[in-house]
Amino acid sequence: MIFTRRFFILFALGALPLIFAWRLPGVRWALIAYDLILLLLAYIDDRRTANVSQIEIARHMPRRFMIGEENEVRITISHRLPYRFTLTIKDEYPPDLELRGERVLVATPRRSGGADRQATVGYKLYAASRGDYAFGDLIVRRLSPWKLVIKQDRVRAAESVKVYPNINEARRHELSAQRNRQLLMGFRKTRVRGQGREFESLRDYVRGDEMRHISWMATARRGRLITRQYQIERNQSIVVMIDAGRLMTSRIEHLSKLDHAINAALAIGYVATRGGDNIGLLVFNRQVTTYLPPQRGHTQLAEMTEALYNVRAEMIEPSYARAFQYLSQNCKRRSLVVILTDLVDRDASAELLAYTATLLPRHLPLIVTIGDKDLRALVAQEPRQIADVYQQSVAEELLQQREEALARITELGGLALDVPAGQLSIELVNKYLEVKERGLL
Image (cartoon, rainbow, N blue to C red; front, side, top):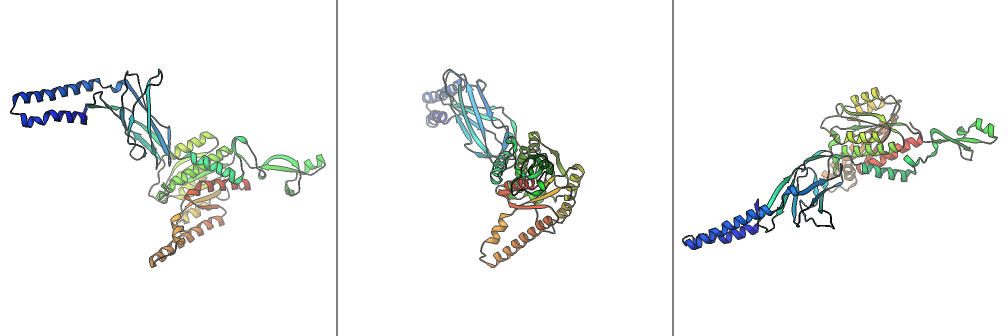
């Protein structure tokens, strides 16, 4: 029981005069009786206040929180009490999640027809990091009818929630990629003909068709030129390798490089799944921490999401040797191997370059790095003092060495991408679609 401001004011009206009227027995006992009666009234007021057991209070929220988005949490109140009252609710939400809304919620259930008296209040939590988070209980306060006391209770509501990578971003990038490249995949089964290597149908020859696509047997049977039509292959394999080492801990645009890499991995996984391809996953630092063999279907995408929601980058150097050796031993089928990592310069990336060569010719490696916008902005701006010139020189040298390292990967026969964090997912999806269109697998 918590006394209200009204109670203390009324109590002071009887207690303060006692200082001056203590020597007057008649007045003294009257004031003491006044305060005792006030305490009795407060006790009765507390007993009249609705007990939390008579009220149903529950927290409702999504089964999965998404990183980088506001996730809504709702508190519902329902009861059958014969009078209206007001509740003040404070939820013990995870402190690592950012509150978007009021910390203290106020609800006044109202009757709607003949139904229970109900009310719903809520707030939003912004998740900046993936992982497991724990909610505590609900602290509920109710003002008594005479407003002399506040009754406080704790409603048991402890539960945990998982913050997952943002699959909504993957869906958005799929739509963007379809519009940009005019490639429809998935349930509509729209095919891009004349590309790829999988036979689709026969049709009459038209000027401009390649001679190597002419079917001479069909031509002989029909007495006119017939050409073979091809579609982009389905059921190909993609393996996404994610570096969870030291360089992936740095943050860009409120997310770590690892978070950007995970979002890109889910984007290509989502598009590959809808396109009928197999998608696999390998996460590594000094050791291989996660491996999902390439498979197709939405179950595989769900397993990827579950495997990635709690991956953390560690302040250790990654071992490309162990990662590539593990992949070679466990993935025999030719695959597009997407390596999401970071490069500093040619010398520091010597191990990566060396082991990329071991994938060829069995696999097609695609090394994807997250471009550093700060370095590019530093090079582009006009220097104002000598120190700026030195900084720009270092930044330009780092960018040049990075480009040389990526060029070396291309010389080895692989593919390379260096894109800003904000464009990583869409550029990776477009590159994957380009690989399929060109029949590189």
